[in-house]
Length: 126
Image (cartoon, rainbow, N blue to C red; front, side, top):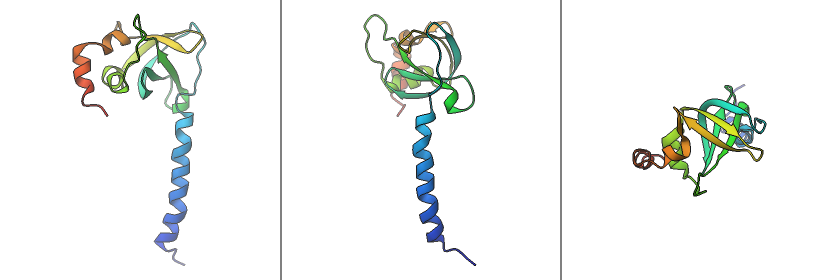
C-alpha cells in the first residue's frame, strides 16, 4: 500500500516543528556553581551579552553565561559577540547570579568586543 506524499508531509511536518521547538529549551541548560571556572567553545549566542559555553557535545551540556558588561555595564550586541567569540574557546569565572568574566586567548571578552576590528567584523553577522 502506498501512502500519499501529502499524508506523510502532514504527519511529519508537525512532528519536526515540535522537535525543533523543544530543542532551544535544552540548549544552555547545564549549571555551574558560583566561583567555578568553566572552559570551552562558545557555540551559541542567544541574546545580547549572553554566550553559551559548551562543556560537552550536547546543547544540554552548555552553560549559559551572562557577561559582566565591565565598568560601563553596557549590553554587548549579539552580532558583536558572534564576531568576537563564536566557535572560539573561552574561560569564564562565574558569580552567584550566573554572570561571568570570560577570557579569550588571555583577553577579556567584553574588552575584545569593543575593539574596532571586532566592531567591523560584526557588521557581517546576522
